[in-house]
Amino acid sequence: MALSPKLEIRQGQTLIMTPQLMQAIKLLQMSSLDLTSYVEAEMERNPLLERADGEGGPGEGEGSSEGAGEREAGEAPSSGNEGGNEGSGEGDGDVWLSSELSDSSRDIAQRLDTDLSNIYPDDPGTGRAEAGAGDAQQRDPWQTGLTTRTGSGGASEDYNLEAFVASDVSLQQHLGDQMVLAIADPVERLVAQVLIDNLDDAGYLRLDLDDTAEKMGIERARLDGILTVLQTLEPTGVFARSLAECLKLQLIEKNRFDPAMEKLIENIDLLARHDHAALRQVCGVDDEDLKEMIAELKALDPKPGSSFGETLIQPVVPDVIVRRARDGGWSVELNTDTLPKVLVNQTYYAHISRQARDEAEKTFLTECLQTANWLAKSLDQRARTILKVASEIVRQQDAFLVHGVQHLRPLNLRTIAEAISMHESTVSRVTSNKYMATPRGIFELKYFFSAAIASAGGGDAHSAEAVRHRIKVLIDAENPDDILSDDTIVKMLKDEGIDIARRTVAKYRESLRIASSVQRRREKKAGRG
Image (cartoon, rainbow, N blue to C red):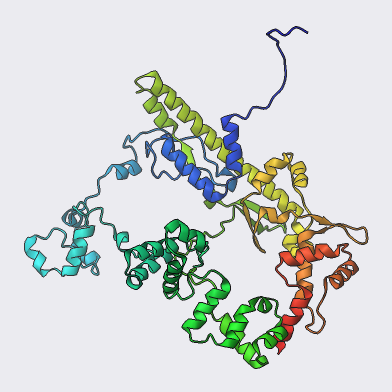
């Protein structure tokens, strides 16, 4: 066969991921917080995008069109002056917007035909904004200071009171301030700062000290001495390398680290298993003393560094709200607070496109217009898709909304995708990082999708989440004298028509963080004792 270059013509069908399609897919799987940040960044880059409420953006007050992506919630986007008056001054509203607001109290008093002190008698600064320098001595000095800093048009107009708000002190800063007082040697201070910087959020030191001493070029004994000094800093328990050492440092500080407590700390794994009989034998104490020792341990802080530099926890904001309708059904609507409200300012585009000086500026404006239009359409399509998927989930899980989690039906992505004529990957993206507010609480959309567990009698399958909830109910109601084993739970569930294996019960129990029957028996006996 001869090898030679040649040209061939072939016809085929391929799916090309255009940048616009990639953007739409990216927006679909974003959470509400990520979407807001993304849209804000796009508004900074694109001069044709502006907020639907008219705040900010180029050409404020001019005509705008091309609605935003919040229409699914039943709100029509505000488009400002759609007639394109461009500040013509016609109408009372335009006259009010074009009028200048004067800061002079004398001008305001003339318009109102009375002194401002008669209108605002409780305002100490009313009527004195125009006072001369001779009145300054009669003013209250504190009020004078406030007027100077916050007055309109003054030199201190950008005075920021937030600069005086105390910032959170991190664990490293708190320990660093103490370290300079506890350690005087400059070399040891450098080593101590390295140890401080390597603490985790709980205050534990996760470094290999041998490796650290070699890298720092100091003896291991000297490094241990520095660590011993650092372990005396507040909060007590920091720089520990294990939970046992953390508790030991706190007990030493309280002068409660006696031989019996030392044995208890050394055998803390027995305490985790609630093996009180072995602990009594190891520590050489009776039941009453052991209970007091355990109570002392529970009063200690296992994470002494967690109180510094706390991470701000963002509350979950639902994307979909489900309410009971008047006809007995369910009303599903989008949460408009989580939907970015943006508009494409066509009037501003028409105005600046006529003033474009060269082809490069025209190309830039055209690209901005196309990007803005596509973003608005993508947001609108995203809202429609979320609403469609959420509505079908509510229809499928009606029994859960009425009766509770024990009636949660087994559901998968394919069922929803076939019902709304979409691909499974699209449904998967919609349910990622989205939440639904129902009368039974706020749930992630993925919560409603669970595996099916066969019915023992050949009836309808049971949801894995419902079975997990049933296992928790059975264990919570068990008799302390008759602890339910996994095999017993399997028999009880089969009597209720749920065909489940023992290893599945064990897996669900562990996912609920429920101890085994042996540990539960020890816990409940210890609680009764």
